[in-house]
Length: 474
Image 1: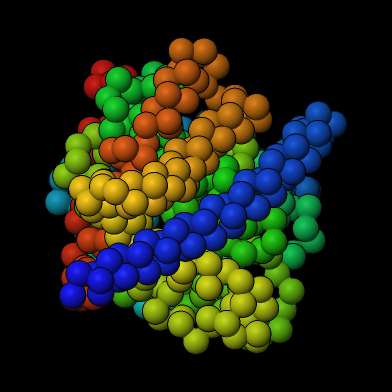
Image 2: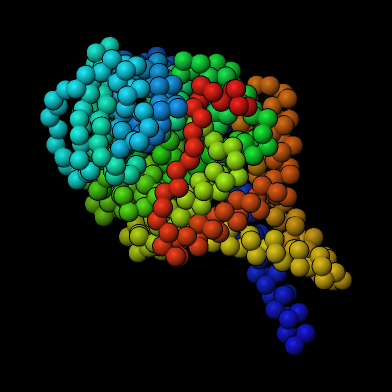
């Protein structure tokens, strides 16, 4: 019996070791690809003049959609940031999804809105729209007040009401930098119709000085949980999405800041209200529809345009968010599982889907087993200590080294965090990520797996303090 247990432990350890080594190799390739792409973009930015893209005859009109459910704390600041965007042709549509707080009242009062009769085509069925309001001060600012149907339903309603050929989805608790919309639209404007969706980078606003819808000073929160999320965002966007985007392998563009072709999004069925990961679901739907139509289109990610968003500050709130994100990922993968390894869908089916299944979906399960095996090997001692050390090294590379590289890439390319103290803090926190934060996220993502398995469908909303108060609670 003892021999059987020892043999089983060795086999499990070898499986985890080979799996983690494979993931490290894959992420190394993505990181190298991201470096090459960032270098290319950095060189182009030296010669490219953004002013040329601000001409009315060159830009493409964009409808900015802001779904809001109980966002009274930060909705005014978000709208203010959108009003200051450097983009000539835009309209802003706030979609109130049956809020139970004072979101509607605050928006109507602050922007002096009045009810209007506006004709629109309900191309995608949504929950009932009760009224549409227009600002007397800013005619391009609309408020759609509808019955609760979820975030996806609110975005679909916004698409139906919008009048422009492209729409940008923005979370109600987010703030865009002034040139962010222009930069995220540049790949679409330059592609001649080949690019049908473009996503921007999202950063954590906690700790920043935000006034009147603008980030006046970029800084870090003094809360370790928030600092780790800053690093996590840098890693996800710098070492993940840049590399995947270069080869048209993206299955996720952040719902907090993405632009889509309205025609293609509606043809693909719009947002799905049957998943909590509506942002990933729309991207996957687009890939599927494009390939089934035998078209050659791209979905890209742009690292430079930045959207600032409020991050959870408690373990309870963060665990809810991470579990929901992972549950949404699994829902989309399962819904479109026939695309996996299907050559009909090109590299999305043969490369991207296997990656998301094996690394993103199965990853937390394998990592959790890996952490358990390390503890078990340390307790058993003897020859198992060397194996525990080997596993720990691989986990350290995956959990900490790539995060440290992401911090360095940020400092080298965009350099939003100009304070040496902030950069040193990020670097040091990255080093210790493997020992406390990474295991927590693994547990939360594993919880998302269980929620999906047992058909848990609750959204689990987060409490918001408001972006203008982030520096007060840093």
